[in-house]
Image (cartoon, rainbow, N blue to C red; front, side):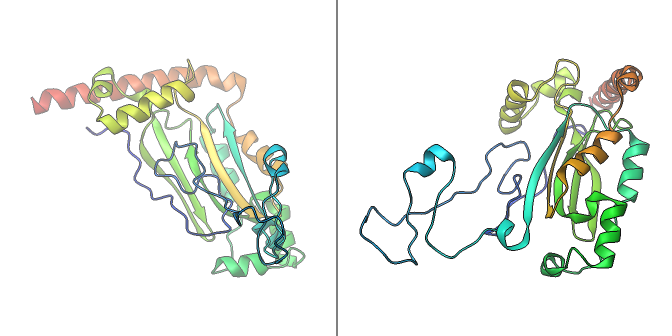
Length: 261
């Protein structure tokens, strides 16, 4: 089945300081962050060893935990933070490509060099003025582009490497027969998507991208990507394009079935 929905990327992460919300997932649509925090030291209330971590009862109610150790987070040490960009409209292909072309290519060969780079260096300042995306170290997720209404696009970027490629079709682009032929695992994921992500007009199509970087200007990045989205006026013609594209996929699938029968 040429239109089967598939996820072929390994998103596991072994970095103990990783803040990427999409790491640790066996499936790209999973909502569990895959990270577990442990601060156990027993309930010894009299322990005064500063090297031992002590949990505090108020951590649960205030959404944080305190430790008397000297460890620091990636954000404390390097200014690393992350956020997830979501939108329910497709990117305009040409505007999206233009935004990516403004993304300065990293001149650093490894993550540590990028982290230790001073934000006040002339090259860094110039890059940030050109595009707020210049401070992004890692990004990944799924894109919806108007030029490919049925295709789920996989976005993967790390340092000098940037990839944007087709990764199957959106669940909503499957024919009724394809849907009925899904294997048990795909069926489970399809039904989860129907419950949690479905839109009456656009199905599971959406933007869902995680950005990790040093000194990120989240508002500016959101603004850049927001300008790439189709406008309200552009969504009308796009709807017609999407319906036509799905009809062509259905026809191609039926012809394939006839040839194989």
